[in-house]
Length: 256
Ligand code: PGA
Image (tube, rainbow, N blue to C red; front, side, top):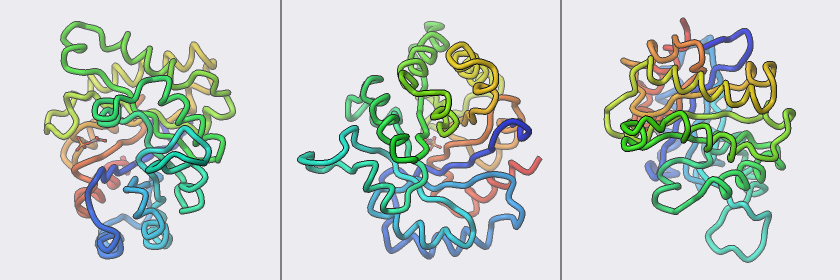
């Protein structure tokens, strides 16, 4: 973390878990566990239907609501899609794009992810842009090349002013939901490389100001060490964001 130059962000990704009716009780529990003086921005990215409930329940403990996906289209005949305007209207301040589960199960490519990030920025929603390598790519020593390509493609056509409203999340695919965390050295190496790519694209100042999160089996035990790395500015947390005490413990780990 480097609080002098950028925000620390702890974002939960509920994926396709929880119910609308469960949001209020969850948030009541979380409120009890969260520290009074939080050292970070907190967001919970829920299924779109839960966003209004999250906005309501998160207000007094300053937890923002986020979506997990958005349509690249503005509006119209796109059955099943949710637009950036609709997310905004529901109260979302953030939205994940390019999560590896969407890349894998919904065949999303880098061009589509770029279009989605731009659709969000056009409405003032902060995209949390996910990038990450597979185990095969890591073993073939292709991690940095792959991440560089993903970051460049995702940020194509995004201005330096818009970049200030972007968050990048580095999530090695082999670490997601597996209990296998990247070591803090591995995570730092890639997050530093991501900042290097952004520096080449936008210059030193914008690169210094962008928050880069780590995601992949982050939990109460390993959070402190990961967050102590200079280029890791927070976390994108799946499994551990489903339990108020575990999520709050990660928030507390930013207090170092
Ligand atoms: P995990 O998920 O924390 O359960 O590994 C992270 C993510 O997919 O964002």
